[in-house]
Image (cartoon, rainbow over the protein chains, first blue to last red):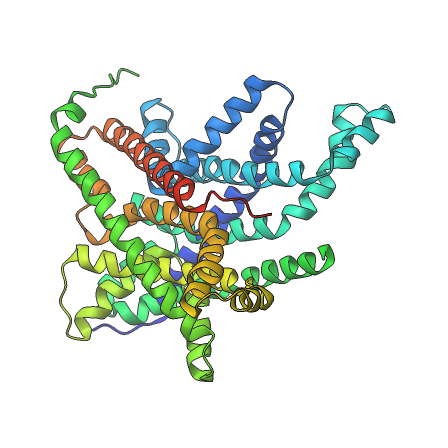
Length: 216
Length: 222
């Protein structure tokens, strides 16, 4: 058994940095594209609606791990040479955009029709109707589910380890192989994920409770 | 670029892939059953009068739901042999899937049980129904109906999560695909093909769940 020294801790910290970066890129990128997906999914044009629905159902019906593999090797096939972290980040962005798009579609559809009709009657065009009337309320309604998905995404970045990308879980695997102390290392790695995810989960649950009480 | 897509390897290995897909379905179904058992026992423990038991269940649920499945399966994979238990990777995968799915099932089932109103039970008894009839018709069936959508979508997630079991080399679709990939270097073709297979598997499961729902739960509520 090897000792857990400064080097091992530093290596895990490096991995943690990538876990956080991947989560942030995936969430922000997924948020931008996800907004587009949600708008397409609730659009008045049936072709847009159907395309968005298809996109969502493919991403919700296949394992995240496969999405990583297909995007990772698919980009390589296109002949563009980009770094591994970028390929993985693109995969997480696409994944997050489908899930956030579906969550926000629910939020948009939960806003009473009267709001849209009132905005129309006031002569607001689509952009300002969405930006100023519908979306602010929709985001508020979907906040607990959005936070829930963020937790899913942070945990999901661990799958980049299977593609060979060194983030927290892969760093843990490597350190565990070097020190022969899998239980301790995976215990530490699990505790790090828990420290990041648990406060988010608690916050999401609190918001949800507060909304449920307000709705009663 | 001059890479030519060649899916012939996928067709050559189709028998292997189909067998592996069946293994994935089997893994998912056994994982779901174990998750359901853990869910029911967990809810019983979660609502018991013994405080340490309640706390233990809450801790289990929170830890499982806030750590990645990959880390959980590695932990179990290494923890079991240290306790002197030697199991093959596929059994280990079933245990990991069952524990993971079980934690989510506990939360979902608890929500369903919490929602049953006491007045309904009393009304049933007042109408002269037997205690077992009250439990079966007034407690169990509506509770199952209420949690059915979230429980089944959690089961679909569990089915997709089986792919992560490749990390401990359990026998399922992704691990077989990885072996084929390392033999043939047709990475994109192989992964693209099995992605479609996963899509078909999850659509089949959704169809099955919808059928079950239509058979058991299609009755007017109000």
